[in-house]
Image (tube, rainbow, N blue to C red):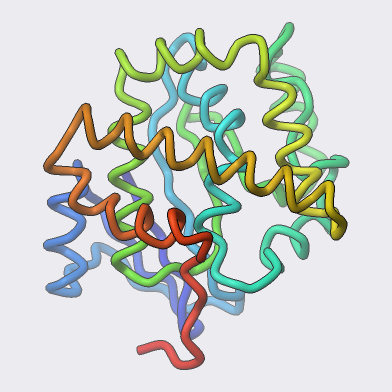
Length: 232
């Protein structure tokens, strides 16, 4: 995977084959590329899609869960600000499931900005954009993606979510926008799914779960990785 960390007007790029290598590179500041930028703080994780688009579709399904538990603000400002500029109602291309056409998808983005948090690129990789995270929570997200999106696990999860995927995607993203009791219950719904996913990860890969446990402890107490005022 390729990780781009936008911080302090710079982009730090790390290439890592797994979470253990990323952990080591972050500790040693062993980035492969450094650029200046005027963009705001955020993180982009780039990873390969598969031929059946299972990774892409599962990421779409789980995106409201990731956005909810890894948000670093008190009211999901990062997602909401992106949504204001988005090409689509819920900040996501609407046709990733039934009759998904890559030709139409790439044609659309030739004349529109790539603002959405999930972008399929023409080299068959996926950019997943999320707010800035402390390193321990970035490692937790990276490890969770590794475990959940492995071939066997993703196939089982896609089958499991098949009947309720639209409910999770649409209602999950809607809950981020709402500010009423409906939003509260939908948010708890997403948190419960997140906890279940992390329990699966613990069962499947105890070594990677050591990283995931950082976000599990917060989520289990209905907390988020709120950003500190100062960044190193």
